[in-house]
Image (cartoon, rainbow, N blue to C red; front, side, top):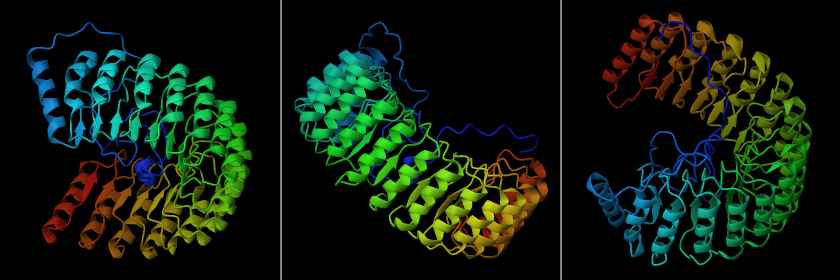
Length: 522
């Protein structure tokens, strides 16, 4: 609305895995590093999405509470949860304040349950006692396949109890232990389990406190495990030496296709070891996330060499590092020969005009690319021009994110021209680019005349005033049959007059076309 815009949100992560389109057979992990997500929300995409319930536990376990008596409303709620498990194959118990007592009480419903295949116990304050009760009940369960205990107080002791049970379990294939206070001892227990378990294919250990010893143990387990397909260990303390150990384990591993190692400070040392190991593996990765790891332009060459040898990789994230132009050029050059990359997140790497031009050249030859995240790279209007020219006739690109790229009004004209011709882009993110009214009007001009594909346009934080809002409103009216479904103009300088114009435009086209669904966010 009107007034000065609030500061833009801090960059906490690149594209979510959901946005990257990863399946449970490719990649797990949180959408945006550091989030304690329930199953599905920034979790393995093969698991359903449940709504969260407020702030989750995180790594530090909450102080132990006095045992509650199972009576009254609490008892009624527990019985309702037990009924849910008997009636539905997917059960959301996230954030229900079960505690150990509640978990133990409803565990009996799991013992001979022949309905529920996926249960989310996340954010319930469950500790060792609760986990022990659940494991005892699960001994008789033959249906449960997906289990989330994320954001609980498992710590090392509870994790060891769970790991012991999983050594003989033959049904659970997807396990989410994000933000569970797991340290090296718990990781070692899980490692011993992975050496003998033949069922688990997807394991999430994001946002715990796993350090070098735990990483080494897990690496040794990966060397002999043959069934794990996706492994997520983002937001821990792997470091460069730990990454070298992981690389050694992965070199011998024959199953993992999805690896999430975001936020582990592996540096150039870790990237070099990892890429060398991945190059020699017979089983190639399809998804790799090494964002937020403190590496520089040297790693660009390591990654480039790896890309030349892995044509099965479809999703790559190097978000929030310091590749700069040199690293970006190396990766872009490799992409010309790699015909597999569908999603590239290179946001927040201090890429300038020269790097953007190299990416543009790669786009002309790399046709499979569907999603490109460039946010937080100051490519400027000239870099934007090069990218727009490459995007104009690209046959597959559907999502282009260029938030905070210093596009300015000049760059907006190039992008406006591109979307007139591109027949595939559905999502365009241009937040924080100082577009102003002129840049907004340029994009509105394209929306008004053609474009039957763009469904989402984000123009937040762009110093747009009422004049720009009026141009957008007119564009909406002129293209009543357009594809656009969502326009965001939040945190600009638009007053009530501009808001009214946009609101009336939406109401008008909805009257003209009852099937049209358009939402404008102020």
